Structures are given as C-alpha cells and as structure tokens.
Length: 75
Image (tube, rainbow, N blue to C red; front, top):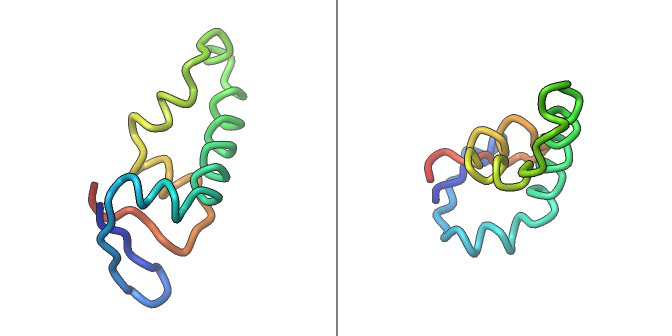
C-alpha cells in the first residue's frame, strides 16, 4: 500500500496491517463519516454491513471520508 502526504508529497509504502495500526484513528474517523453518510440514505437503513462495505472500497472511502493529511495512492 502506498500513501502520500497531501502537504509534503512524501510517500510511504506500508503493509495493510501497518496501515491499520498507524492510522487507526484516521480510519475510525473516516468510517464514522462514511456510516453517517450511508445511514442518512433511506435505502441503506435495512443493511447492516456498513463496515464490510467501507473496507470493500477502502481507498475511496478513506480518501473521501477521512480527514487525514495522508491519502491512499495505491493499494
């Protein structure tokens, strides 16, 4: 996985496990934002798989729902 800093353009190549450990707070914030957005949609209230849906498209969800200076450039 390759992450890039939006401010310094520094690149960081880490494994998925390292990403989960180092960016735990950012992932949780992105997930909560994703969950609020999806649960606001009327059709989504019947589906309980929000976490698996979030991780299914992790790159887009982390980059668009997260508030981190890092973004996932490539999985």
